Length: 126
Image (cartoon, rainbow, N blue to C red; front, side):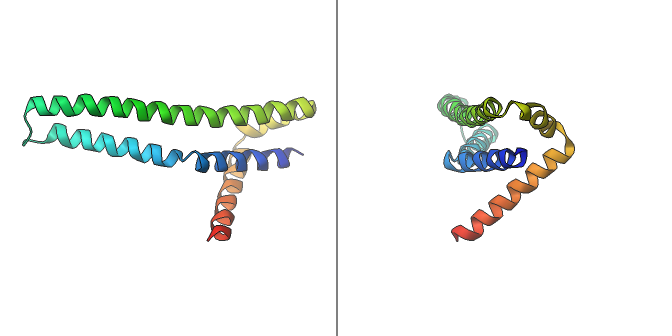
């Protein structure tokens, strides 16, 4: 039963990660940071232009960061609800699940499950 929960947990995380497009948010934040660093290092722009750009960019980066955090917290919330529903339905699984989450074997196992799921998902969707 614990393996079924862990499989569902991994699949839910991956599907939510892809559905909410968190990767795009991260890439967007990195790109904005690079643009800001390029403007700061630019010798062609004067200080007023740099300041104006940095004010606009900082607001955009703040909004993007908030979107990223909200999406990530949404994933955590869904996984937390899954955990508590499982514990509510099967109270005897609480200790094994918690032990599996912190054991190296459990972490490697869940990582391998996730990699296998993503690979199978990509192969079937092509």
